[in-house]
Length: 224
Image (cartoon, rainbow, N blue to C red; front, top):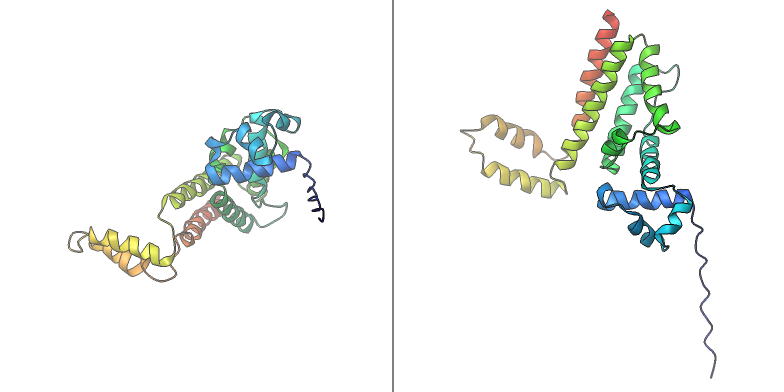
């Protein structure tokens, strides 16, 4: 009788800090940052949780690493760039990052241990504003106004119904049935004339509001 060959064992990938953080990122994206634990992360990587501490000091170090990854996905201004174009790209890339990682805004704002990645981000934004001629006070106002808009839009976008255009149209039709046109003429006008149109994407509204803010900042800068 022929001897069945033994299966060749697939070598296990070595555990590294980058691999630990990437797996933690995937878990956070799938289940939310609140459900992330060292035990779950160890199971995902096929190791005991204690093995993770050779690559991250503790849970806080893991969260700091995730915050660094998130902020690293945001395109920040370069020295000498046109401030408006640079901040527009930065805002759009921040919204896109928050769509990929819904947990990131709260985590980034909660970290108290500065890192080079998380320090370069506000430094670049404030530097772009100051080099463009904004005063310190106006640079602060602009920074927080833009961040409030970006984060607020991301939260609203995350909580809206999602799905295919057909599914969204079905949701809108259900809403319309509860809104008699005689009582709610303007809501009906918006839903029928805009939301139900093929190709409507709420994300497109982000750039309209962003341009309003940037235009307003440009007027303040010109009048300073």
